[in-house]
Length: 455
Image (cartoon, rainbow, N blue to C red; front, side):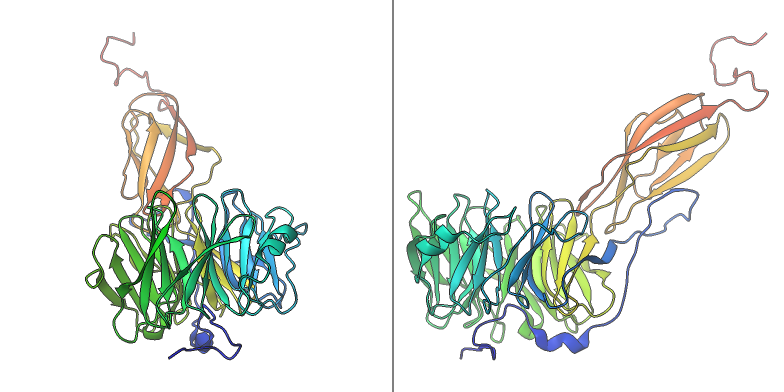
């Protein structure tokens, strides 16, 4: 049975859970100095990284390679561009036709944006610098998708645009100029609502209508072959999105049963669903992954972000947002940050999962023969490893697991080195340290010298 929302097409996110949100917050510190051994770090949460107009109600979010963030604003029929500092770009237009109710977004290698409108049954191409709609693309597309309700969009490595249309259970291939190249029928009643390319160039769809994943494989000539029910989820699981861990698995989100399923890309249909992990009370509503293969979900029930690293060193909730933002969409940047589009507050939250150390130079002082102890503390998910790049003073060492810089200096001088923190989500920028080691007052400096010295 087709589960259509009152507005006549599939929303990718479940808004019925808004009343379940919990108020919470998380923070982290960056410290060099005396501290408590074993103090744990946490992802740095910026609940209001960006504030959109009140009526925007963002329903999708996308990270661009240049550090900017784009949101699809279903409440204001527009697209917004958020700069790296969290300000909304005032020179970006992003205006779409009234009543378009945009739903999903993708970007090609040249930066062009593609936005779907299920209500108006079309796809818009926007310039990522100006936000202006490409009239030529719209003209070439014409009425090709009329009454077909495009629900999601993805772009291939060669720049072709693929659009999942839920009304006719198919995936459509468009050229970069907007011409309809091909249509790939899925199973009747599939209702594809999301599609993404895997690392090997094959295309996968999440089908909310029949609880399956479809796969479209392409040969060297670019011809596509559809495996309609490539993965069949257990009864009652209806997927709305998927994310790849870049290690041979795809993770599928089914909010109806608060479940994330793990599917092995190498196994044949019927045996490839290898795990169905329930998240009772979390109400995960959106899923994404980063370049390292970490998988993240936005959890409406706990107002949190959960993470699963490929090596399982991080599993479960890693950060909580403040207020009741209703995170309908989530995306991850290559720099180790996660962005959540909050429809109820028309805001974008940013959570730094990778470690962050100040990039300014830290000055430290020590005395030969006297114990020295300081520590570095970076935000981000634990466990975190700390390493020195360069040479610390003789007798001084950095403890990788804790960030403590300790020891007894053995020789005077000025020493310069960098400290770098790393975790499952990435690596920090180096923090430069200039450490001056002096002799104790009245010392001849002979005790550390193996040769004869003094009078």
